Length: 153
Image 1 (cartoon, one colour):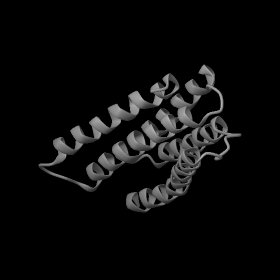
Image 2 (cartoon, rainbow, N blue to C red):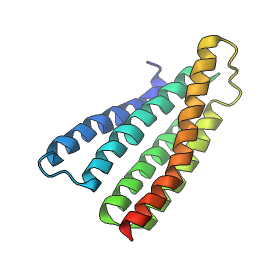
Image 3 (tube, rainbow, N blue to C red):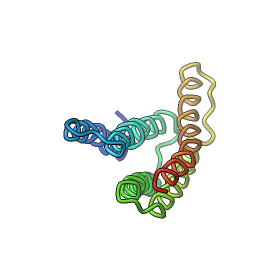
Image 4 (tube, rainbow, N blue to C red):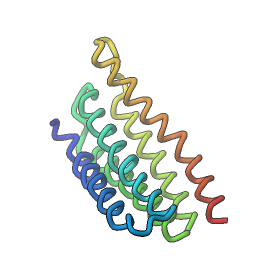
């Protein structure tokens, strides 16, 4: 694994395991919020973070700089923490801040792979997969905020 993927692989893997722990802990009395938290931990904090970090590490034409990796990792993980906390404690503004941080982080990931050409078939598939994950996250963030806001109302 490329070392530039580590700032995303470690918290992504931990998030997937944490999602399993939350699922097991809430299995006796599942609720909407516990199910949502498990899905968010596994899919956004875990899988999406792994795809973004490993995708960037594989696609970037040159090694991303340490400052870029640091800002990406901090922004992405703070956004996830803010969305989780804001939703679980019922403070929508915290979730909105988290969503804004997510958009910022995704912009940095797009920047990290700019100039990549999908000339080889493998690169083309990887690049399109990366772009699709970014697009899904960009579209699902406002949808999730609306659902969360309506649920809280």
